Amino acid sequence: MPETSRRAAPAERAPVYREPREITVTEGVTVRDLAQKLDIRAKDLLKELVDSGVFATINQVLDMPTATKLASQFNATVKAVPFEEQLVEEIVQEAGPEKLEPRPPVVTVMGHVDHGKTSLLDAIRQTNVAEGEAGGITQHIGASQVVVDGKRVVFIDTPGHEAFTRMRARGAGVTDVVVLVVAADDGVMPQTREAIDHARAAKVPILVAVNKIDKPDAQPERVKRQLADLGLMPEEWGGDTVFVEVSAKTAKNIDKLVEMIALVGEMRELKANPEAPASGVVLESRIDKGRGPVATMLVQNGTLHAGESFICGSVYGKVRAMFDDRGQTVKAAGPSTPVEVLGLQGVPEAGDRLLVTEEAKARHISEYRQAKLREASLARTSGARLTLDQLQEQLKAGEVKELPIVIKADVQGSVEVLTDLLPKLSTDKVKLDIIHASVGAVSETDVLLATASKALIVAFNIRPERKAVELAQHEDIEIRTYTVIYELVDEMRKLMTGLLEPVFKETSLGRATVRDTFRIKGVGMIAGCYVQDGLLRRDAEVRVVRDGVVVYTGKVQSLRRFKEDVNEVRTGFECGLGVANFNDVKVGDVLECFTVEKMAAAPVSA
Image 1 (cartoon, rainbow, N blue to C red):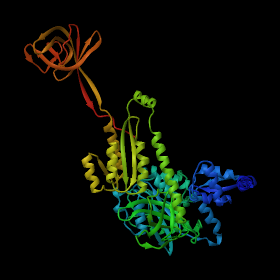
Image 2 (cartoon, rainbow, N blue to C red):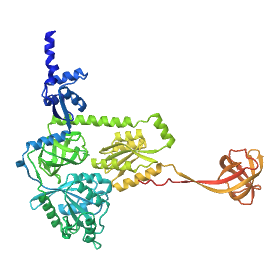
Image 3 (tube, rainbow, N blue to C red):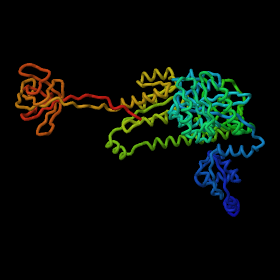
């Protein structure tokens, strides 16, 4: 017994002799990592876990509450920080100011739809992007590089339609300079104001390109006045905002615009450490049929090399190949370089941080985050179940129509936008319910999901697989394909209107008083009537009113005047009328004749 006590004593006394301290712990910390931070043996931690009823291995990933509780056993408090934040902090600590070198500016082109952003970029890059875009509008974020007098400038083109506000906001978040494109013949529009707000929120300088000055109705001075009212005062008026009047069509003043962009970039003294492990941001992601998950990334610091392991949000990968904006293979990508990366294990969210790290660490963090996402998804699903009381309340309030939707798109940015936009079209009568949204072609699995949920499949900028089309036809599932966001929104509104119950409009025709009744064999009860006002019609509905109370409503079965069948009888005339399936007409009853017209429900408005 004494020997046993001596062996147990060090483990029991360990927490007592440790001084209070704070340790930094990231998500997905393992037992081994936590033991190193606490400066104890891993087996001591494992013993604490076993004592609390948890059997774990040395590489077991711990959640934050468990890690906090374990640390407290050893007189330590835990400060939880995101993995990316800690890694960036370590990189900054390792790199001194002497390792920082000038980097190219990242320029975001923003503005209202159809003001010529992409055409202006074409003129700068001497490419032809605009012609290949659906509806003539940009619906993805594109990144490209331009060399100006031996200096590189990186351009990011963001969509201009109002549905892509989130994508524009993301573009402003990674940029150093914003070029605000305003058409001289159109002036300041709603998305122009949004672009200004995004740029100011990102705290980056704004340079204004007044486009389409070659048009006869161009009024560049009016544009300057409008922007001055919004706080963008031109330099020639004593302000600090650079204005350049350009024409993307004739390439007028394009050189001057690029020169001013380079100058603004130089004034910001942008620097990065090309020797550090790469960090950056995902601009766009998609699934390529032949290459798997593909992500467009902007390297912001360090250099990304082929073969390196990295993590992006809940997805990890290893750089299998990289391509520049022209489609050429590259082995390394330095600061301010946009590249297309292959080798991801899944499709990251646009806007996720890219960080190069050890493969094992990236895999651990990825598995931990995916598990958390699954838990959150299950929690949302279980939380959506109704109790009997809630169900009863909904039934009392009246049924709300639902339109289940499965969304498939070519890139992650479009998926984000559609999942954000479509539910906003819901009203108090019709609810749009997105049951699934992902990147890639419409597959058989998507059709089976739609079949189980009786959902509509919306395919944006993609085509369904052949087998999926055949299965959809067999299961009577509709797949709607779109390439322009305007058309999709309009179609959804029409579909929602179609789900509403039609409105029935009643039109009164006339009233008659029953003066006598006759029972005819094989026909039934016939009411001898006198038409007081309006008319009685054979193809109409009839309501039998007795002492002010409606006793029956049905159709006119027969209508006769003397021995002749007639189509209608007008005011002041007598007739014989039979009410279908009703033989209890009495003298003194009032017969009200009317028609019911079915009308479409009022259009749904967002």
